[in-house]
Length: 199
Ligand code: ITT
Image 1: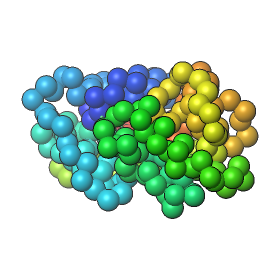
Image 2: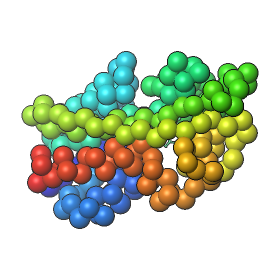
Image 3: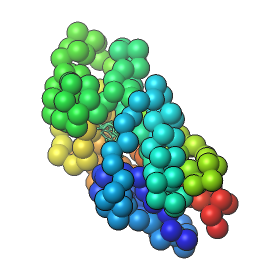
Image 4: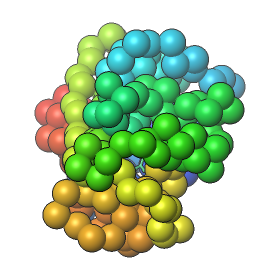
């Protein structure tokens, strides 16, 4: 069975394929690069789930294959859950990790150490060309530090320390981050659903 992962982020494809192989799920995972005719899907939803479903349904319909999409972001308690679904475009320029991180640190400069809690969320959606859909969510809680540390990962990883850890997720290995991350959790939660719906 073929399954399309609706992302142009190569890191997500590597991560999901590793999780599928670990679970020994006999699925042929393809990325969007196999469908150059499918354009960018605008993330116009108001929640992670709406955006993930929007991407998954659009791509399933256009490709004729079952599709998985995820939407993720960082929710900061002291900012009432922002940047949230706006995490990739917080500074105004989409995907500018350094500008997004610098703006967030500036916004939190007056917030004391005991009020810097935050969590990453990753919502993954599976959609079939028939319209059938499933949604799962993964969360990783932690705190925002004041000075970036580490060059692994992406996005806000250099300023995030997960609960119970001392390293930032930007200092962790990919495997160590996968084991506790929002995306690792939601992708692993998708495995039994894939087996049930496609197996
Ligand atoms: P696709 O939409 O093509 O899948 P994307 O990279 O735009 O790829 P998202 O919309 O899910 O993916 O990204 C949301 C943003 O949230 C991302 O740009 C980061 O700023 C932040 N983010 C999400 N997961 C993260 C993680 O594991 N570590 C650090 N930052 C993360």
